[in-house]
Image 1 (cartoon, rainbow, N blue to C red):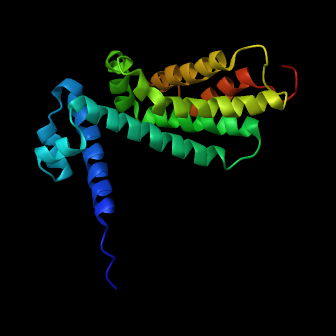
Image 2 (cartoon, rainbow, N blue to C red):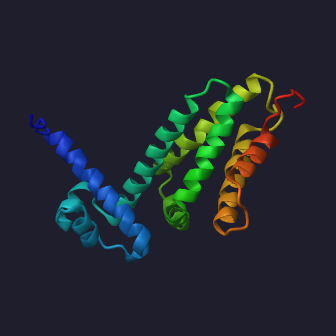
Image 3 (cartoon, rainbow, N blue to C red):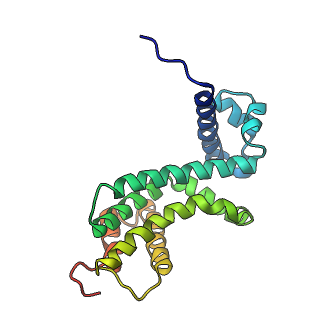
Length: 199
């Protein structure tokens, strides 16, 4: 039995995914300034001009890569979180997920951080990262509602502590100065929630 023919839309979506995958590899390998659209097209199996039909500039292409990355990360994190009903466990599992992704994608995320000044000129495009960060807010609010998290600190402060500690710890792990990811996540989460109700 032969596979059904793809619709025009499916072909367009497949091509865009191929462009973004190729662009991400090229950006990681050569950096933003060193990346060439012709090389991205070659790796995606299409002409350079076709890439420009999807993304008008290299900056737009980098935005597309970042947007796809954060959208995929958000979907993956939500799948993990939704596997548990207890908000304390959800926070623990989100920490585990986030630290692992920081380690797996360190080179790409380092490149994204280096482009922060460029991205800051386009604040409307930061929605992809914001959606991911808001997962923490949702979970932590449930922890507050259950009385296992502090109520006196603004959530944005706690969010920055959570993500900042995990980001810094990922570098420590990658440099070989720490061995246990579980120690990191357990201690970070332990600073934010207390199941004994003493917070």
